[in-house]
Image (cartoon, rainbow, N blue to C red):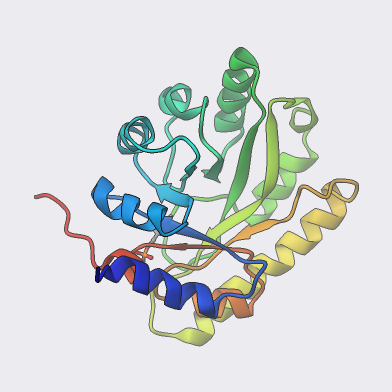
Length: 226
Ligand SMILES: *Cc1c(COP(=O)(O)O)cnc(C)c1O
């Protein structure tokens, strides 16, 4: 059978170095397409809406690793806390508190990435480098026993200017190395740098990404309901 999503993902996987994890971003896409990739051996999927994530988790095989890649509201943490494999977009102390409390309640250590704002656009979420370092230096951070901070996540500017995108990724990589050395030196678990999407994952990998989040290059363009 001719299944384009499988062909697409094979091509992308061939381009990725072996240490780079591919998160197939399946937001808005039907379960059948996820199952086509699942049956082809793929297990890591990303969604950006809690309700859609929970519905797909409930309907699909339990060995899928679900990543929450979108902005997460605190009142929704409880819905995904029991099963989420990685939360990419953590960008406030308040959200960390909520995730930690929920992890404590269900006795789970929840893997998270801290999101850093690297794009020129104002609208994107994320911490500045200063806010990140302030948060990590703060007295409360070491008390989050039910969170494992695995690394950083960022989104580059939406632009045709490859050099700008490259510079943004490079800056995030440097911040990652600095923060790792300064705050996680004894901790081999701080190893994930999530950067790169369909339009820029090649640049991101060249700049040291260890995890790319690719949607439309696998599934085709998204059409949102009106
Ligand atoms: C939608 C989304 C992606 C994937 O975008 P594509 O351009 O379709 O690959 C990656 N990261 C985040 C945070 C997203 O919301």
